[in-house]
Image (cartoon, rainbow, N blue to C red):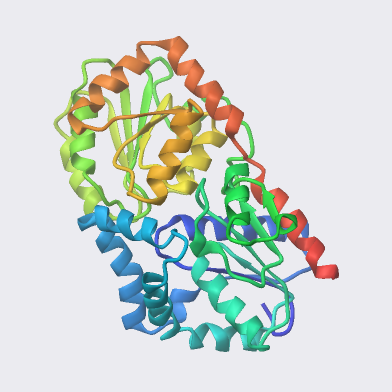
Length: 377
């Protein structure tokens, strides 16, 4: 992107979903406004190494080793009147806001789009200080919203649900500035693909059910135990695991399936997740906002395991309330519960219909079309 023009999409790589949402919006901006320059920036990539390790590494560390602490902090910072933890968070963040400020000053974009609350806060601070005058918008990435997303001035907030929209208004956000659009998903999830064709592309047996196990972008959690339960279940089914960007986990899981007679495959990072989801009968996953949105776009029934306390437990509640998923609380019951579902076609179809009913596969299209109207103001 050249200086003084274009669209700057800001995100932070604390969790994989924020960057995925940013790339989905980038693709859609290029499709709807081919004459505009578009750039995606992970603000942690230009921060100093200590802040990056603290922010991204600290998040993953808490999620993996102290998830209950993550849930406690998440809820604490979402309460009216809470000041201490938000003040501490702001103090830590502001230690490294200057690289983002300098970058935005240099670029001077026509529009800023955020898929993470950290850059949204930095840009709002710049605007309040009179350092920047272009509009900005924010696309939230979970099914409920949180106080931490509220940073004024902000021309638009795009939420996953109407409940998320309503919740932002309780923190003083003007209702007219909020659109309930869904969460932007990657190209491929907004197009239909018959299951038979998806299985042909993925080289899967068309006559056996397919269970897809997702490990998340960074592959944290008891994946080995989950895989053991799936390959040990008595029902004849194919198992596919996507290990994400974790080569050590990939190798470990490949060794785990070497001796099993069950058809099982382990993949690393792939840009064909939409084909694997279209091919599957069930997905076993943590309920991250982007993963859930992609599964819903495919009408794929979900089996929820190990939600991160906080945003993922709220996502889980949303799916269970709408009948699009089941939740398994004990790893040892996973194979049993998955086998039950695969043996009950009406129940499986009900989950699929519920997923399709709340899917928003065209969220990126809606967000970009609305955001582009701000360029003319």
